[in-house]
Image (cartoon, rainbow, N blue to C red; front, top):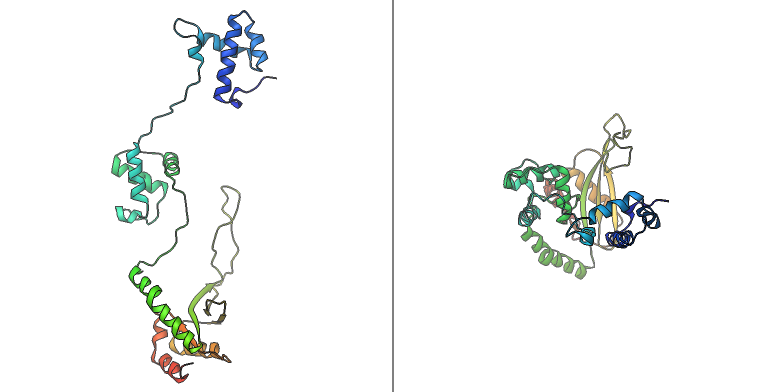
Amino acid sequence: MKKDGRTYSHETLEQFRMLGIERIKQGESPALVAQSFGMHRSWAYRISQRAAGRGRGKRALKSTVGSGRPRKLSASQEREVFRCMDGKHPHQYGFDFALWTRAIVAAFIEERFEVSLSLASVGTMLARLGLTVQKPLKRAYQRSPEAVTQWQEKTYPAIAAQARQQGAEVYFWDESGFRADSVYGKTWAVKGQTPVVQVPGQRQSISAASAVNSKGGFWFATYQGAMDGELFVELLKKMMHRRRRAVHLVVDGLPAHKRLIVKEYVQSTRGK
């Protein structure tokens, strides 16, 4: 049974060639030598031909490392690509898209270095640089690191301390909307055949308000329409129904949360 030489390591094949050519020089039949190594007889004739000629010999049978096609970008240029992509987005370089794709990277490289790369070459380079395709986390562009630090180090600790002194609970409140015709995430399907997900023909939607604390306490209620001051007060009353401990409720900057009717209701609870 003839064996595929590609299944052997370079070192093993080199040893086969060295032993084989030595045996052939000693008078053994090339066909029998090839057969003893499990190779085709043409293998023996090829190594004999490679070793023939003055100044060649066994040196011509040593394994060599294939250099492959030279890269179009130098190592320093690839490092510059990494620096430009790491923590930055295409908008900062004049592109209309906010996410890095292979096509955007290829356009960036061509614009900066006047070098044209295929998408496959771009993907290979990015993998070599340790970059992978990932789903980005969303951050509001209004996000203020200083305000976040102020909240974490001063504002919230003060709220928590006051709540402990009063025997109260701290809850975080937020609203969300849900639609019946929305499809999120990904699914597996046959390549080239886009899957179809059946959804209701009518656009049904519902909103929900919820409050949660750090100890696992949770409350929620659903409602229709947009949030306003009157609805917010109604939901707050439902949340506080039969609640014995006072609540420090942390809300966002939605205008409905700041209405006069909300402030009046909070004052009417006398600290609860």
